[in-house]
Image (cartoon, rainbow, N blue to C red):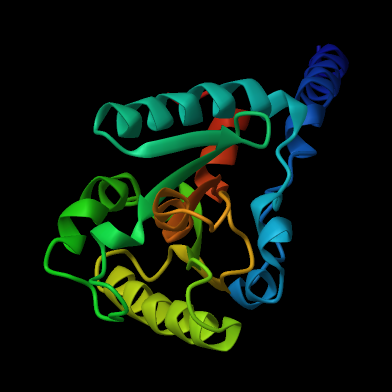
Length: 213
């Protein structure tokens, strides 16, 4: 009888180890990353990091498209990139700053509000954002303007979100226009802040566990 129980116990352990194997191999893609590592990356590197495994892609894509639709319904300029894994929200800086000013206007917090609401859980996203200008003035001045406006956005953000949220800022100046700077409309489009909502550790883990809703 004891021998039979021992054999049964051994068989159960073998089955458990076989079925649990793939789950045990899961590794958080954020493991080993410190915020300083993200700070050392350029904008494109940060947008593609961390990579999402194919097993988590569908759930994350569905979740992100839903987030993007919610923001689009509120009137935001929204794009989806990285195979539907990253939401990009573009805010015209004319809605955040007065011309050539570096302090946020009184209307700015309301513009940020819906984005901040999405970031309440600091483990769900990594936030990367980039401050752009048009090419009016010298490149040196535009980089200065971008730098000072970034400081205003960064300081305000840190007062609104958890300190555990990874926030990576970029000052782009006039180096990355999306429209020709030869018209008022083109220059207005280039004056912008782009927010990239990137899957965070909790989102990826929930997707792996089939619990992301």
